[in-house]
Amino acid sequence: MKKVVIVDDEEAGRKLIKEYLSDYTDLILLGEANNGVDAVRIINEYKPDLVFLDVQMPGMTGFDVLTHLEELPQIIFSTAYDQYALKAFEVHAVDYLLKPYTKDRFKVAVQRLEQSTGKNKVRPLAESLLMDTRSHPERILVQSQNKLITIALEDVIRIEAYGDYSKLITADKTYLSNYGISSLEEKLNGSVFIRVHRSYIINLNKVKELNKYTKSYDVTMLNGDVVRVSRGYMDNIKKLMY
Image (cartoon, rainbow, N blue to C red):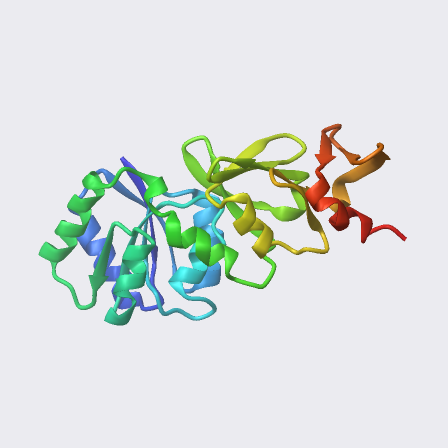
């Protein structure tokens, strides 16, 4: 059984999807929205497995909606505009229904649900969309067990390189980002997040104290973690001292 939400600014579009859904007893409709703002609220509240998502809507586009979700469901885009098809598949949507579509075409989209490996299919562009919403993003998409969620960057105490990925450490949990530490450094607010080592970035707002040694410093974070400042990044620390 899959929980479903329908998002379309046209009543006729929502009605058609509901009509076609009636043939599938394992797809349970939880709610619907006619704009992007309500879509974010409903999807975050109901945590559906599948969303039929329009692209052009009042308030925000369907792609904008993705950047505000706490968890990413499977997505079937439904729109009258074919110019968004490539972008939809870059997001790894299950399917792209171009209006007007037939019942048989809808059936194909539902069948593709079985071929999808799950919620984590909506990953690559969804994450980059979130990172590109502003010059310095306030939230980031991360892995939490078998799902993707967004967390506030202000809650991140430090960031640690993890191969081609990065670990984001908060007060109560460690999350995995698909971005490497250098990519994160380029995106984050440099007045808050400071690179102190090839493997570490710290949040200055989470620093408890700085201890100087002969040729280096140790930074103690509010959660008790101690991060060594390497020689190559000493200037990043020194320029903060007055």
